[in-house]
Image (cartoon, rainbow, N blue to C red; front, side, top):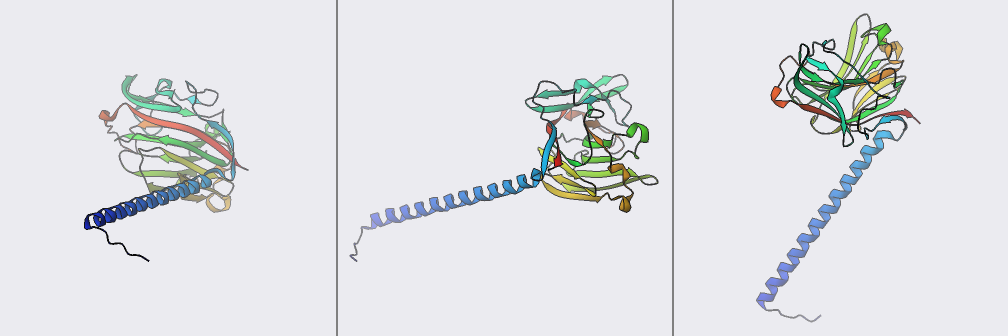
Length: 280
């Protein structure tokens, strides 16, 4: 092999080009690796979401108004059984750009100084077992209490808590805790729940998977809570009957407290969709 001696200046340029090419190669390798990791993670999340289920009902909120074939509006300012301060009315629920928007506002209606909306599928869309999920972005502020939950369809006859309650998502005030809780009657009110640290002000998919033996809670496809509802374990007859879905943004109440941060109002809870699946 012939060895050619290069001038010093050309050696420097050649070395700089080599380092430059090496640097570009490393950046390209890192970029490809990152994309591959992201793609694999997304694949893992999506496969956990609905692989064993078939969609049986959804509201994608693609119209211009709330579809009353699916939803009822609760009206009134009696505190929702929790000494909440808002007056629930239809006007605070709108649909825009593919989202349901529930707005909490500082305004007087009758003796209430705040307004919001509480929507239910009672008598219209009721479900026994399956996967119930919604993609939601919630407001965060002192006194705010957004919720995505279910109640037993027999609540008028059985009353609470004998009708059963499944809290798929609850959040209060300014903390970073997601609450998933089950309520029922067993010689008195019984509840069993768990919490998870997360980023509440981002969009998330909140879900439960519910069958004859258990209810499991998920955030973005990852399970964080599980309750055995076999009748011989927890006397949970309530959870073997149809339930309906509720969405609301409460302001104040026994749990978050009665101090409300008016500077954060109006506040919006965004719901991209609500979906119900049955096992295929």
